[in-house]
Length: 179
Picture 1: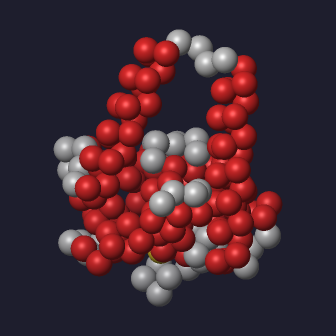
Picture 2 (picture 1 turned 60 degrees about the vertical axis):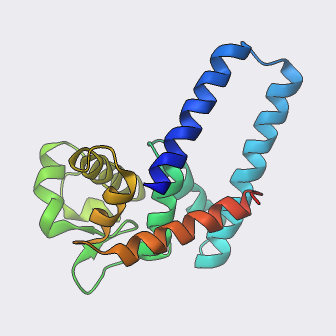
């Protein structure tokens, strides 16, 4: 549960710090926004360089991931699954950026209003929504254990998949300026 512990610990630390300190002075808020923008640009450059995709394509992926819980995890999944290719199709029939297995998920995703048909999985926004829904569902099945949810996302008991996602998350952390 290394990944889940780090994520949950960071979220708790950030929310408790906000509650104690009150509003940030304008200079600090500006510096925080600049840091976030710098990190975003570094991640976008990493995504573009690694995939060969134009910055506007990877920025769309980045922005869509940041509409959900665990955006860096979703970006890491997109890196591992399709190298950020929204048109990817696997030999097993997994579709789109996040390589959602349409045969397993289309009906449920349709009932939930996330997609209308399997072709929607080639749409960056809808595929990211589908993937976030699936990851959240796996989180519930695994009692909040993010590592187990990621393993489940990659396939039945594919522990090597977790290693790939963790490696991608480490790359993201490094390009953001982490040590």
